[in-house]
Image (cartoon, rainbow, N blue to C red; front, side, top):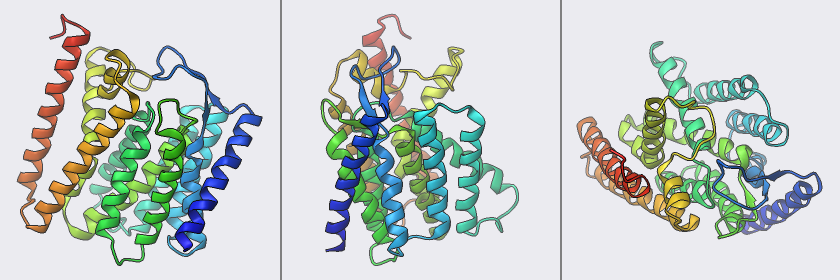
Length: 317
């Protein structure tokens, strides 16, 4: 019953935010780098940190994790409305990562590990944000991750917070996973969700001593890393907005439906997660197997990307 009441509350709060966004002109205007062509309400992803706040007041999540997510959400929302410089956004990411490391009691880990962990966390937050470019892709991918974590945390006290964030995804998805989206997540949604998911990923890896859990983020990770390398090769500014991700080529240049592309990304990640869970249950996911799977997935991705680029640019090599 509690979950149903929260679901209704989240719907009401999202609709209330739409009125505010419309009143104060919080919109996303398409430009030459956009994958959409219509003016759309921005920041609908504010429902994600709101859901976490509800989880906090219900006693499902700690103040530290809530603080990390709310911090980046506030800074990101300000950036959605009044664009900020890189420094305050970067500082909020660093502080949030520090809070997560503190919550997971990782400052006692070897000193050399902490810089690597911070780089990976900040890299993940920005990669997740950069991948938010077409209708449905962020919320469906996040929902797959949340369902996977919820499966692993059945019976645990953290199960409830995952359910509430899953409900927030359902609410946001109702307005976003469609041909003509009513709202976009905005940085407030994508970055706050990235921090939330990062917390569970790091917790799992250190709790279970299993690096293979990183494969739960492999589809986004591979697309983001390869795209960055591709842009560096072409001497492009990797911090500048672009349309170079595989999903953008599929949606923009090949004209595939946004929802179709988003569902394929989420479905592919779901299949990978099921395989990983099966391998872990059978105690077959060693570091070697993890690396082999990672290289195989990268090879598949590169093969698809090259074929797509050859269709778009016949002279591509």
